[in-house]
Image 1 (spheres, one colour):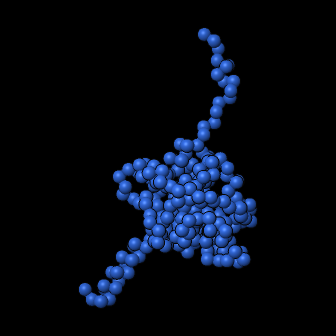
Image 2 (tube, one colour; image 1 turned 90 degrees about the vertical axis):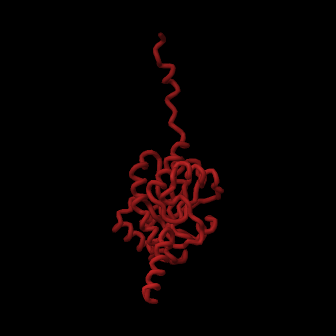
Length: 210
C-alpha cells in the first residue's frame, strides 16, 4: 500500500470515529448494538448526577422560550449547531419523537451554539431560522448563551442532549448522536414516571348500589 493510500485510509478511520460527536472528549454510552436498551437506559438514569438547569430566551423567531413554559412536561433540550454533522443527523429522530409523543406531554427544544458571542446573536438566529425552514424542524430553537453553557457540566461536546422530567429535574445528559430507538427508550422510561390524571372524585360515588 502506497503512502498516499495509507493517509487516505487513516483519514477515513478518523472521520468514522468522529461522526458520533463533533467533540469526542467525553465518554458516550447508549450506542447501537446493546443487547437490552431498556436495561441500559434504566442504568443510565440511576447513575445520572442531576444539575440545575434553566433557560429564559427568545427563540429564533422572536417568541418567548423558557423552561418554565413546559412545567409538567417531559422536556428534551438538544444543544447543537447547524455546522455539526452528528447534530444534523439527529434532527429526524427529534422530529419523530415530537410527532409521536407530543400529545402525551413531550416537548423538544433546540438550543443552538453557532460560535457567536452573546452580543452578536442576530446573525446566528437568522441562520438557524433559515436552516430550520429547509429541514422542516417543527420544534422551537433559540441561540444558547454563555450563562446557559456554564450550567452544563463539561460543556463543549456536540450534540449534547438533556432529558428533563415533568418535575423540572435533569435526569440524563447524553453526548454524541444516538439512534431513534435509544432516544425513544429514554422518553418511554421517563413517560412512565409522569403522573396520570386522576378521575373526578365523584366518579366512584356515582356508581349505583347493588
